[in-house]
Structures are given as structure tokens and as C-alpha cells.
Amino acid sequence: MTLPPDHPAIPAPKVGVLLINLGTPDAPDAKSVRRYLAEFLSDRRVVEIPPLLWQPILRGVILTTRPKKSAHAYSQVWTDQGSPLAFHTRDTAHAMQAAMGDRVMVDWAMRYGNPSIALRLATMKAAGCDRILLAPLYPQYSGATTATANDAAFAALKAMRWQPAIRTLPPYHDDPAYIAALKVSIEGSIAALDFTPDALLASFHGMPERTLHLGDPYHCQSVKTVRLLREALSLNNPPLPVHMSFQSRFGRAKWLEPETEATLAKLVQQGVRNIAVATPGFSADCLETLEEIALRAKEVFLSEGGENFAYLPCLNASSAAITLYQRLLGRELSGWINQPG
Image (tube, rainbow, N blue to C red; front, side):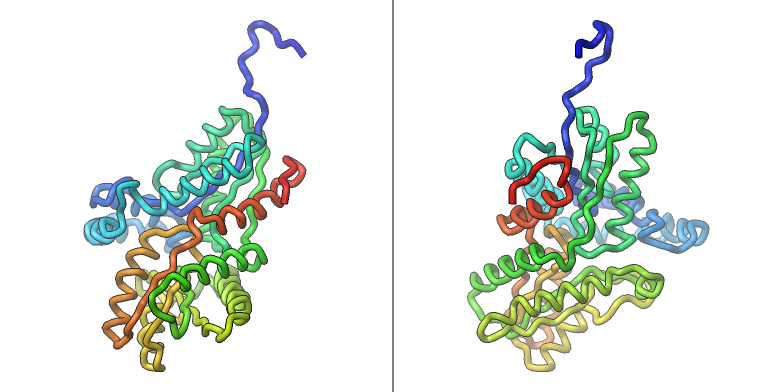
């Protein structure tokens, strides 16, 4: 069909995939961290205290004291490429673009910080994406992760006159392809160690216990991931014992247990001297894995009498990760594109 000469230019229709991760400050300094924390801790899905009570606390003691401490933690894991979470997510998007070819436009965004979900959705829409799959890279669903990422995307869509069609990636905590990717990654990392672990600890990001009682499936899905991972690794000879814990507590509320550092101390008491720690709830390495586990948790384990500690990397942009995402995204794009495999 021939368009009228004064018709505005319209790009050719495309299918888009937006990979979404949690977020990161722009730099490892107090100013950048303060800005990031203000956005992150103001999200009602993250902190469910009424704003009239919470905001004075946040704007007072927390944003006055915590940014400097957190900036120091970020500085310990920052690289020449910037934030680990940002460049691992970027590299994953680039690898997925190469894997999926020109049938799909693959981009990436952060729920908090940059690049924002709203900005990347607008960019994709301007490029012609009239169908977009939102892919929060959280294997286990939580209101504080998957839901808030989708919330931000829907808020951006609300401001669009011409909205693209939208699909969302479901949690994949028990997907056979995810368990297989974890198995390949963990076994490969352990094989490269110069010691043999007595046990594997799977550490997940913590959540307040009340979220479980309010119906959030995160705890149950995390437990199922560990059960399936344990079954997958049990085929090894001898089988590697797999334990589970939760990290990253904040505030005085009761959090999911057992807690990671306490679990490490207990394992030492039970005779575990050599341990490997994986973080199956994180798709990419970040502050919580590289500083909290690889540095601080290691220090706890060794100080309690442990002898060898190894942090096993996340899937990041590994070949196992790309194979996993090709299968997950290809399935969700069914009917929009024909994705082999």
C-alpha cells in the first residue's frame, strides 16, 4: 500500500525482548549510591511500611549513613567495565541478540538506575517493536523483584498513546532447562577448583518472612529449585551434599531462614571444612554475590575454622545461560516468531 506523501515515517514492525535486572548505581560513590537507594527503597513492593512512617526514616538516618558504607562495598567489586550486574546483563543481551538473529530486537534495562525500563521501552517502540516480551531475569517469582519490574514497564506503557503488545516471562525456578544450566555451571566451576568441596551451599536473597505468609511464592520456589538441583547433582559419584540459606537481611523484621552466615558457621561445626557456594536466585553476579558472599561470607567461614571456600559464579552470559534463555524466550515468543529448538 502506498502511503500519502505527508504520512509520518513508520518503522518496519519488529518483535522485541527486554531483559530486566534489579539495578545498580551509576558509580561506586556515595552520591550515586544515595540516588540509587532512594529509588530502590522507596518502592512500595520492596519496603511495605506505609510511606508516612517509612520516608522520614529513609530520608533521615538511612540515606545519611548507608550510602557511604554501600559505596565502599560497591568499590570492592567495581570493574573497568563498570558495575558487574550491568555489564553481565548487557553481555547477555548482546549474546542473545546474536543467537536470535534479526527476527528479534534484544535490549536490556534495570528496574532501578540506568538504563531505565521506561527509556528502553520507548527506544524499542521507536525502532518499530510492536510486540515486546518483558523478561525479568529472576528464576523465582517475588513481588519485590518480578512484579515490580513488570509494574515499571506497565507504568511506562500507560504513558504511551500507541502501546506495543506485551508478554511477560514467567518464573522458571523448576524449568528443566534452568536446572540443567545450573548443573552444567556448578559442575564446571567445581571441576576448576584446586580443592574438593565437602558440600555445596545454595544461597538465595532473603525476604521478610511475612511475605511468605502473605502469599509470595518466592520461598517455596527457592526450596523447589534446591530440591531439583540436589536431585540433578546426586547423579555424581560421590553425590555432593546441598544445603540452602538466605542472605541480605535488612532491618529488624524476621527474615526467611536459615541465614547464610549462620549456616556457614554451623556447617563448620558439623565438620565441613571445604565449601562451595552458589547463588541460584541471581542470574548475574552483583554486589550481593561478589561482596556479600565471595568476600564477607568467605571471611566468616574461614574465621569459624573452615579451610577452603569457593564462590561459584552466576550463569551471567555463559554458554549455559544463552542456551537456557534461547529455550525460555523461544517458548514465550511462540506465535510471534518461529524460534528453532
